Image 1: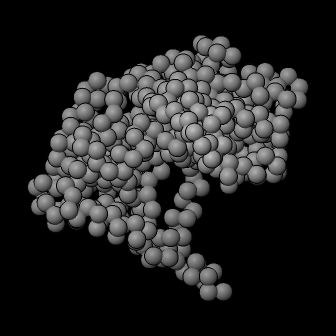
Image 2: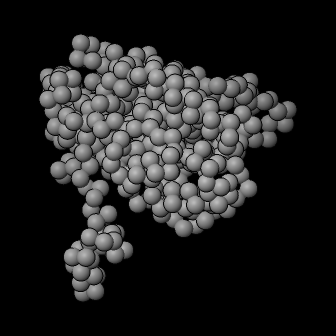
Length: 447
Ligand code: PA5
């Protein structure tokens, strides 16, 4: 089981520490389980893993097989919760170099629709010119500008390159059952499509087709991912004792620290494969908790890389931070430090050691130094980077987020603040329906 160690936060929390939060954590779990809390129409993620419909998994695997057989590259168009989960899992499981090129067995998975960069889109379309490619268009609302814009370009390129019939066969839509332009297009063009359940928000959707299809196309075992999540579901229910429930412990620890002035949580990894897991986690916690003038700011670093950029700040900067370290017990490969007769670099004291032993000592040394420097530390240990353990980790963070948001006193399942930039952008671009807003914004910028 994934383990969480919160022993290194107690010195930073006066009184009886996280024990004081136990009643409100229990209430939060009960509210999630009873569906009696804020945003209760978006808690479908809670039982996605244990309640997965077998025929849905078969259909996802069948679609994945078709894309795998027909495509060298599959482009996933989506933003936020519509791409970060699949990217996090694929990168955590992939060879650091072969997912960036097709490895002969699996199509290369590329991502688009998560920015509005003309250069990015130009370079992507150029790259695809001589490739057999397919598209997975993912948008719950079906109207997100970034994704719709990328999909418009990719759809046209696919049809121009392969003809409408072939393009139809290698395009899949994952969207709402009825609403939105992505649904209208999918139905009209006759694409294969999957539905994002109404009661699952974007950032909690990695265990729906949103995450599962791209992960299966990349060649990974989605059944194991779901099994890991389902097992963690069982380990984080209200029936599990507070001290044995990793999601409850995590939510309690971070809220106790927040109440004691630790306003920033830095998610730390020592494996570059986990970079996108941190991006997914930042969205999960940032969009869920940052509202009503409250919320821990979720940040992330990749160590030891960032010890040479952010290490100084973390060691000696303003003491408003805490760290949550994801430590991976067992790595996949073996590389020993070679002995060298001349020892010009002075590294012979490490000769014969595994590189991972050096990494683990860097991790321990860093944790101790940062704790000494006034940075509380939570440590999450993952046995290995496999589908099963990543499934556990994902569910643990999702459950921890739901609990934590309720303890903080916010609705963790909405994101009203995301609309503000869109309103301005649409007014500035002259989108129909935004005429009044447009006048106001032009007066403001021309003042
Ligand atoms: O968590 C969320 O709901 C958001 O981050 C969405 O996933 C993101 O805005 C993309 O929305 P959509 O899937 O509707 O295109």
